[in-house]
Image 1 (cartoon, one colour):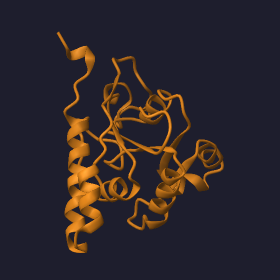
Image 2 (tube, rainbow, N blue to C red):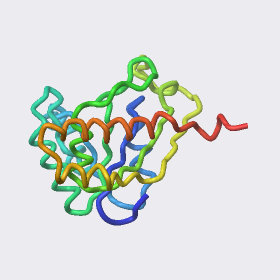
Image 3 (cartoon, one colour):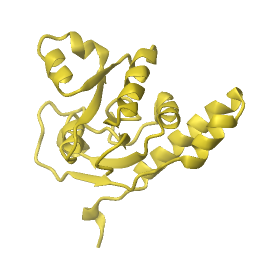
Image 4 (cartoon, one colour):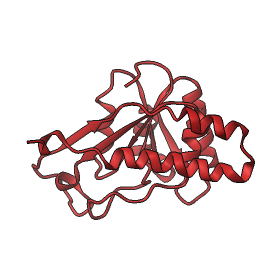
Amino acid sequence: MPLSGPVIIAANHESYLDPPFVGSSFNRPINYLARENLFSNWLSGPFLSALNAVPVDRGGGGAKGLKIILERLMDNNAIIIFPEGTRTSDGKMKSAQAGIGLTIIKSRAPVVPVRLWTYNTYGRHRRIPRLAPIAVKFGHPIHFHSLREKAATCPRPELRNLYQQATDETMTAIATMRPVMDRA
């Protein structure tokens, strides 16, 4: 994990435990993303603001959230992004949301892939957490230099393909990680 400068921490999303497990692993301030409607709640709103959370409109109008994310990255901050957009309902990784590739290319920040195994402890089907093995694995930073160079000079219609390629490479890096506890 880069200890300074901008960094995107991209992780799969299995439970409510994921943000604190990932965020508490770093020796630097972390910015989080949270559903915009959680900021209007009297309890979660101030709590999320204190955690440097960025409000995200999951209904599709995410330009405001993207602008805030990019500003924080340009200010050399670290931000956790869950490319799937929401927690899995069955323990399997979901497809990434469209905006992650755009964020990766425009930010110029390295991406640290993170794989979590927290579903059996506190997946969507559980009201309260249960004791079960949990694993969090961090990959090496991905810099996307060549994709960013192409994006700087390519025709506008080709940008979408570059954004998708950045998304696919990030999700593949996350999906191919195996927990240490699986090793013989």
